[in-house]
Amino acid sequence: MRTIAIIILLLSAAFTANAQIQRQILGYTLGVSTRSVVVKGLENKGFDLEMVSNAANKGPVFYLVKGGVSFGGYIWDDVRIGFVNGKFDSIMCTTYLTEVQSSKLKNALQSKYNRYKTANTNPSSGVYDYNDKKTSAFLYIPSSGNTVLSYGDERLMNTETNSSSTNDL
Image (tube, rainbow, N blue to C red; front, side, top):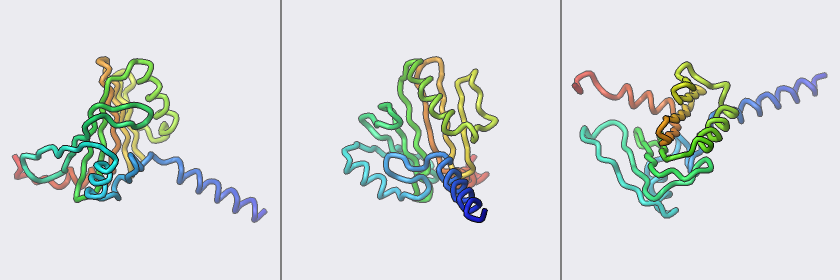
């Protein structure tokens, strides 16, 4: 009986560990990988990165990855990678997908992350939002076909939000 209880405990721990929202993106981990490692690594893989200027010179730092990025089975035309406090904070990918492609992507996310669906999810508006309290995943499928997929580290995104002062206005 004790052996069965240990097996059940190990299986449930393994399921819980694997059931969370993916944090490893393009070979780098949200909230862990540093800006220099991600930027140099992507450049070494042949990607052309351009820093997006930030007029206030504070808050998150973004890079635009040029040339298309393969992720999740699709080539994304517009990819922005964000960093907060020198850590890989977020990625936002945009590209034109057909209705069939968008539906396939939506179904894949729903099957993987449905237990993390948030109140912001609104299928009639093409919005699918997931959050496991460590990572957020967001899919937006507008009628125009320019699908948006993003992942973000919750801790860093909250740091980003809380880092602006009320004197910024």
